[in-house]
Length: 230
Image (tube, rainbow, N blue to C red; front, side, top):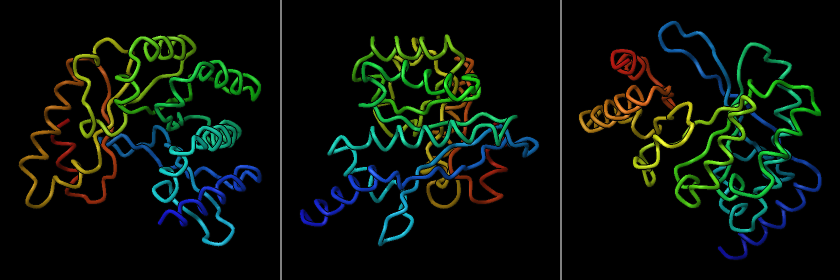
């Protein structure tokens, strides 16, 4: 296993040198009328031997070796360059906690948008609760800086991590993303528990005046339950 991880890290370094990454755009729809409102940009690695790899297959190695930031910036470059193809929609990008809290993240991202002539208001970042908890004061500064330029933030995988409820009202967060495990749980044996959690998240978001996005709706039944809940 150690040798496999070492090989993967070496492959990742070569992939960064040759920019072997590309974004796959997953649509974000408004449930009431199925109107498309935005996209989430998901990274894919065109591995020279194994073909197209999803984040689950290499993000861990990328984070352990600190290579993930380089992968991210390559991805952001591709996303920003393609924003003109989706002029009416916003695009959201995933940002790791380590990356989000780095000294020059907001400056570098804003400069990239400016150099490409793209409107910052059409970009959103997705961060996890860990980013808020690790360094609350720095996270607040970065979020306020980005919000001042029109870039809004979504809290990803909400409910699966440290659920920073005591922090949430302090941060300029545009929306909560309900983790796909709760969405898939709306059918089957875990329906009662998942529905209770979804209702709690929706109630909290409504109180705070922020949006909610449900991840990974795969069936009509899941969609109908979520529409019923608002």
